[in-house]
Image 1 (cartoon, protein in one colour):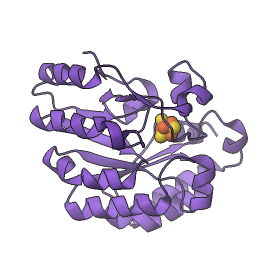
Image 2: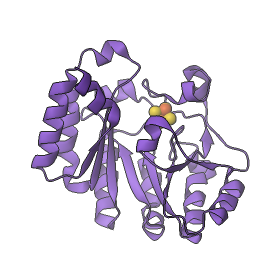
Image 3: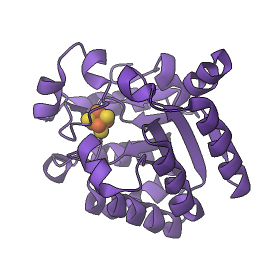
Image 4: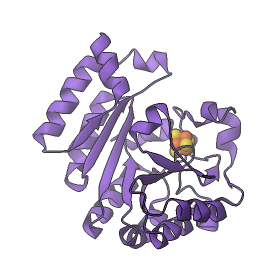
Length: 245
Ligand code: SF4
């Protein structure tokens, strides 16, 4: 395969297959791991996004080879599929059309432009795409500090509500947890519209990690998700970190 690949490590807990449509991501999240994975600096990776050369042509070829494969292809790990450049390029829109045509399974993970996501909800339904939204903060002022170029908390909530109403399978990536109080508040706010939760801790930012009591958070988050009847997955990094305490 050319552009569809099998993620390794922590990313594997999200998806067995993935495809990155853009190079770079202008959301500029402070906790972003993509620059180190792509062996570049945050300054360069977040300065601009551009389409990967021939990505749709190669996706079409990969999709042909994957015919009948039930594994979900995730768009995207190293960039947001609904970042502002999608308004011009429509790579994600066209990628979902390719997926629908080849009857493959897919999922989207985004904190991007809400209007573009909403326009694609019908297409996602046609393609049986599962829609994942990253939502770690309930307070938009904090969100703006950590995810300056991404959509607001209200916009993400509106996307989840609309997708749920459309009958799509929705999931939330509650990762990286930075403020446990806000993470729990997100569950209170969004659980009626969310079919599945993935919860993971902050990594590689020791100063902020140390400020969180992860044992207490793990207990609280599982208690709350159970109380509201939610289906969820706790990522290995959080479980194993707490087990070592
Ligand atoms: S949306 Fe993802 S890839 Fe883009 S800056 Fe944020 S963490 Fe990095």
